[in-house]
Length: 210
Ligand SMILES: C[S@@+](CC[C@H](N)C(=O)[O-])C[C@H]1O[C@@H](n2cnc3c(N)ncnc32)[C@H](O)[C@@H]1O
Image (tube, rainbow, N blue to C red; front, top):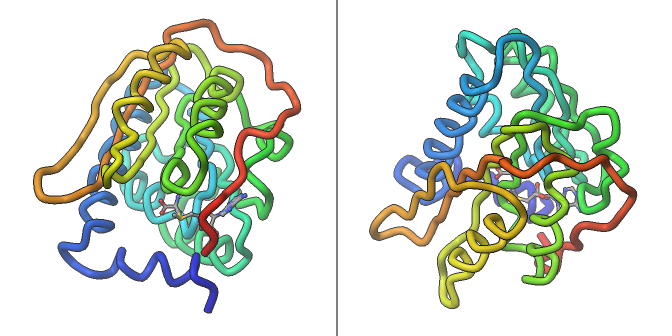
């Protein structure tokens, strides 16, 4: 089995860092959807894996019927898992596309979004790519959109500079979770600068391989 498929197994281990992270991320996604104006809420998830976070956040959510959008995932097994999980959660407005989320092309038609997930990405790409991606996020986002992101806080902890890069790129911090005793970090940033139109570019390349 591919390592990026196996990576998801810890979601099923109660008390694991990943299951704690899931609870935090899903809570932020649910609140981000609630924060959006009445009507359609567009959501995109980069490197979406098996869609655990989106499904957990929106299963039974009062506004789940408003949510449309796209999960972008390269691995076909993970993408199939995400499709099954979204269907089981009744989230028919969300599609899963098998594509490289490190370039902007697969976001076309799904953005600007009100909720953007960048979970499990910043720990697998260079600092230069993290900064470039954050600076490009106003191309994926509507005014007031929320970006939910994760990054481990293992030494050297990159989360302080990631938070600075969000401020530089025109975002205000809504939340940052750094649970004691765990090295996970979960951030939520809201776009306050004007959004920009989508341009064709490479955002990131994974340097950690599954
Ligand atoms: C650390 S996992 C995170 C999965 C999910 N976002 C989560 O937090 O549960 C990284 C995921 O990115 C996928 N991936 C790796 N490179 C990718 C790329 N260039 N484009 C899209 N997905 C990619 C892997 O297959 C894997 O499912």
